Image (cartoon, rainbow, N blue to C red; front, side, top):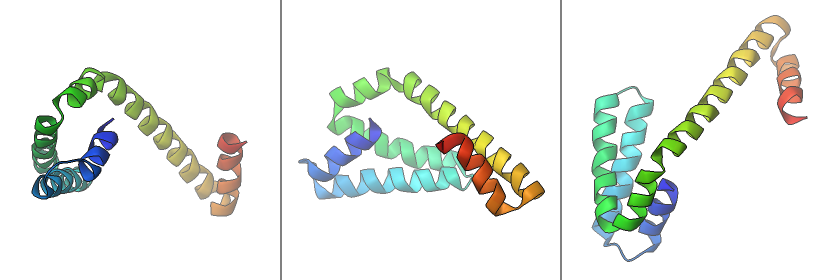
Amino acid sequence: MEARLLARVSGGNVQNWKKAVIVGSVGVGALLLIKGKRSLGAAATTAGLVLLASEYPEQFEHFWDNAPDYIARGSQIFSTVQRIAERFADEASRHGVVDALREVGSDYIG
């Protein structure tokens, strides 16, 4: 939902400076979160999301109401990716990268 809101910002009737602030702060916030600077990342992301919410309050309310579902899905995806990465690392250390790709890929791709 957040991606759709950001897409609406880029194509909607939001003023250019607001677009730049929204996209920039959410992007910088995401990068800071990835880099481990949680408090700065959360602050930057929050600033962008507050401005986004002020432009699209109805859509943001829908996003906010469904946030627990989005968080649960994100956690499931992260957990699955983490298990795959751990299994790949284990297989690669025992059989090499090529065999690990085959083994792990066959389990998840078919």
